[in-house]
Image 1 (spheres, rainbow, N blue to C red):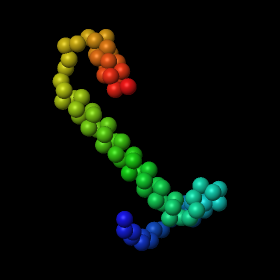
Image 2 (tube, one colour):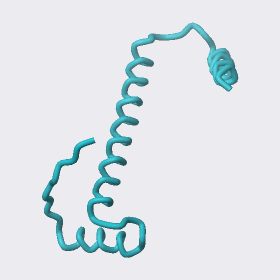
Image 3 (cartoon, rainbow, N blue to C red):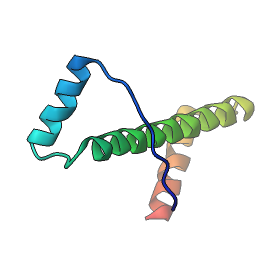
Image 4 (tube, rainbow, N blue to C red):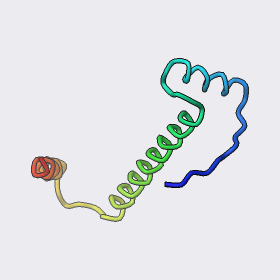
Length: 83
């Protein structure tokens, strides 16, 4: 995987925070800290996209003629089948 060099500007307060995270041993340098933030942001964006897809799928599926108890029973059966 290739790399690209970036220059970023942070406030003094943000810089102090980054330095404190490095001093605590959580990260070894500024770049490692920023890369970790980017990975976490990518994971968060993917989770949001998945949730949006599921909500859309649910809305588009229409109404059910099943009772709430029947829906729960089907859901439990699907979960049990996956285990």
